[in-house]
Image (cartoon, rainbow, N blue to C red; front, side, top):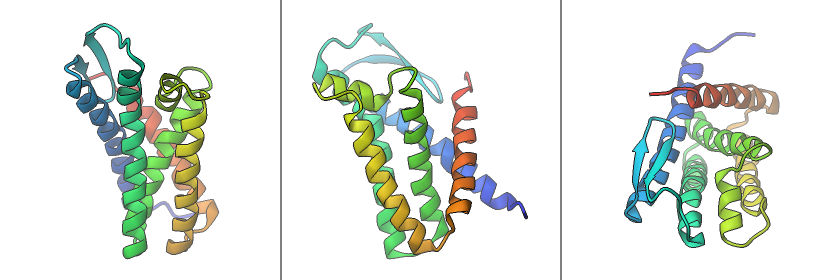
Length: 172
């Protein structure tokens, strides 16, 4: 099996960029509410107020990241349908990988989708199922558009999960 270095670099960039832009969506949601946060490259800490007390604010802040990732996937899928390109497929796959990693995290700790669902008074996994379900549908359809075999998609996906995990460990 031949390893394509440029593909691995592309996937690494998309994975890290997806994570970072997802965090920026949270940052802008906090700023829109007048919150002060300590922003790092891959996470943030709320300073003032110390906690979010209203459900709608929690739904807005938590949901902003998941909404961004879903929009990223949707836009990549739209562009993929307009112009067949493995690049757009990989952008879609990076959005899916990030939300899949969040769903795995949700088994141990609360994810954005779980926090949003609870804040909205919905079953805890409601938004996890909606977001992942929508991204899976787009991913499956997009895979057929670019004619990429499922085994190759799995390899790219596992690599993106590794990149997402490693990026989450950065403490800058």
